[in-house]
Image (cartoon, rainbow, N blue to C red; front, side, top):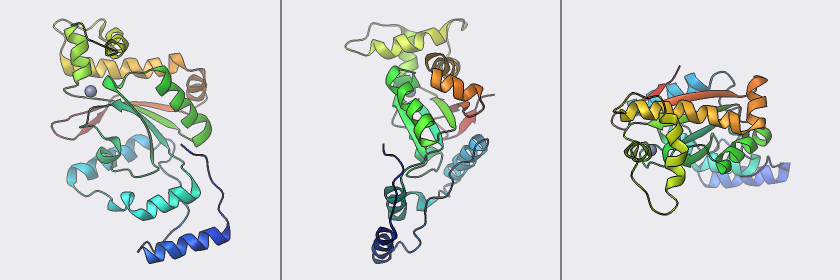
Length: 223
Ligand SMILES: [Zn+2]
């Protein structure tokens, strides 16, 4: 993580020269990212591009690396999602380097490290939206439903997910449990953080929830 970095005209000229030599001809300061109040529709549109195979290849080009390296990061949207290797947020939303501020834990559960990370994103980097993204076939949620003893530090995530399952009809269905877990972790983030709660209350932070289908690649936003 880095704060915004100032850039001198000389340094910018050098960057332009490097860019021209490396084929990146149009280096400009990063323009505003995802606009406040537009996160849901912007991410939805990115997911549609991902589904259609028409992703913005420029998001990953060296030009973007040079831009964000020179001008600093200003991510707009924080994402709390699962560590599951099938749910990489930048790919499934067709966002690029410098766009998303991501925390990943098993079962996308809230913990102190993640919450502090989002507090930094909101307070220092301009993050205006946090999306909690669950997914189908989540092993961490499934392990919580099963309830078998787990070794090592793994109970930290089942313990963090278990309260989300309270009140669900038995036998608990995995996708319904994962969706309940998204709603619970959204609530937990605000409960655990005065900074996030205040920003949300003041209209500076929007909370979103969503479910990613690992079989289709489609994200469904929760109401
Ligand atoms: Zn998972």
